[in-house]
Amino acid sequence: LKMINLLFLFTCLVVCISGHQFDRMQSTLIEDMEIEKELKLINKVPIKSIHYAEVISYPRYDFYNGVSGTSSVYNVKIRKGQSSSAVMYIRNGPDSTSYIGMGWHIAPDLYNDDDTHFYVVWT
Image (cartoon, rainbow, N blue to C red; front, side, top):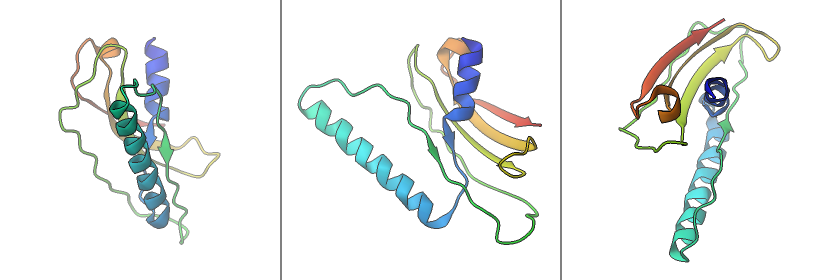
């Protein structure tokens, strides 16, 4: 179970800011919220699913000197059997194993609490 949660952690939400592609991801989120609202209006249970979004930015130059980002969590409440996370990372090319990432994860089944856990990983 821990391995599944860790794999889920890395495949949940990957965000690297990039112009017009971010707008497309935002419109999908709005559409998902509208569908869930309509299902609630007709007393249907919302569809249980995993939402994954990824935005890839390719460099205009040969290298980057740094990366920064902001991720906010406002006391997200989830129940046993649910999990929520976000991660931002930078890596050295699509086939590279050089990876630096940071994020947060809420997983009551893994941590036995509903607190937000911050993490940093690198290879």
